[in-house]
Image (cartoon, rainbow, N blue to C red):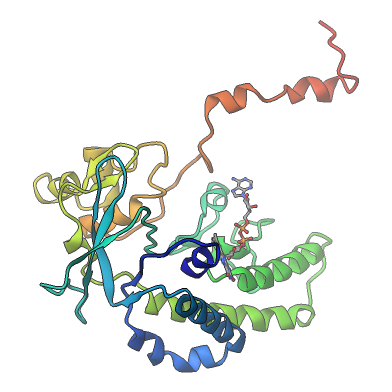
Length: 301
Ligand SMILES: Cc1cc2nc3c(=O)[nH]c(=O)nc-3n(C[C@H](O)[C@H](O)[C@H](O)COP(=O)(O)OP(=O)(O)OC[C@H]3O[C@@H](n4cnc5c(N)ncnc54)[C@H](O)[C@@H]3O)c2cc1C
């Protein structure tokens, strides 16, 4: 993203990365098996260098400053255990702060259909079938690993579905190449996940007045109080006591942060609505029932 912004003419004040370069080197054998990805990474590094974007590894943003709009952030160095190193904080003027703390598969549709999840991703077999007959899943819903992995999984799911829906058993030899790409893609994604896991003690950097659930304006202090004073031991109880995750996004954004602050596991939440839609959008939809029963569109009273 930083390379893209810089190429588009944006002045990137800094790229702040909490992972250590050492962690990347430790997985060198995995990267070596992906020369195209290595070349892609080298291309980004070269672009950052060309645009003179300062890259701060093993650093994190600990504070954002500004009244009405962002004016600067404070960044600080992290020690090997993920704690902020005292005395390293410094202010970086900027107008926009983009933050990523990892990615989560969007599983609402599969979950609503009753598909089993493996952790936070949809469980699939080698043919990309879920445990619900007639439902296949491919791409990010089954675990995030980039476009190549999604395409390979989609290829396999498509071939499997085409055969199974005709009552025949598919021949995995037909998708051997895609299966190899899938294995490689998953190995690459798993290695990236370990390198870029959020720093172990990230919750220490979240002050009590930090808004965690933006929809319901619930602060980190309120979440901590629910755990320490009111005895909440899971995300659902925290939600009931504080309203964190009860708003518009239904926890899509804040659930991992709430779980981290509460010190409990992030469990999939069952949301009957895959995507919140304002009533006005539904009200403006044409009435398809009339169209279907009267193909000419004429009203019959
Ligand atoms: C900014 C950005 C940069 C990226 N750069 C790279 C890169 O450089 N290299 C790389 O490998 N990957 C990159 N990726 C990731 C890559 O785009 C994804 O891995 C890939 O698109 C995933 O494919 P998918 O089919 O699983 O999901 P998507 O491509 O997201 O497709 C899901 C589709 O489902 C639709 N949908 C969602 N919910 C519903 C619903 N309720 N009802 C109906 N339809 C619905 C969406 O509209 C969408 O069309 C990038 C992603 C982003 C956001």
